[in-house]
Image (cartoon, rainbow, N blue to C red):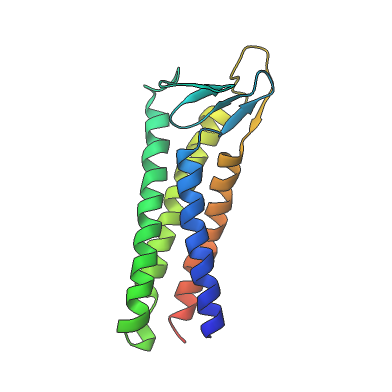
Length: 161
């Protein structure tokens, strides 16, 4: 049981770190022309990053930014609650709150990445005539989606043990 808890704790820390990286890094879409990439915050080409995106005023992008930030907050809260519950609560109720908080994180990642996929990742062109593909931030966000769901379910299952 201790090894399982330690493994879940390590995966949870990795998920929090990956959520930070995928939200902060500007590599959600990558162009094959001139090393250009687009993120949630900036548009970068070669070594220069502009402060504004061409679609920065769109509500969809602001929604994605908000949900990705909320997912970081809920994941960090879930980690703190997990550590707190590990030492203070009785066995039957131990990990229910941390599991529920992690599932809220999962929903935030789902909404944020789904909106980004619908609005920007399907057929969006960074430069005219370029073929874009998904960057590592976008892929990390989907990995965090999977990890947060697995961790949330495991917390809910472990509350009974």
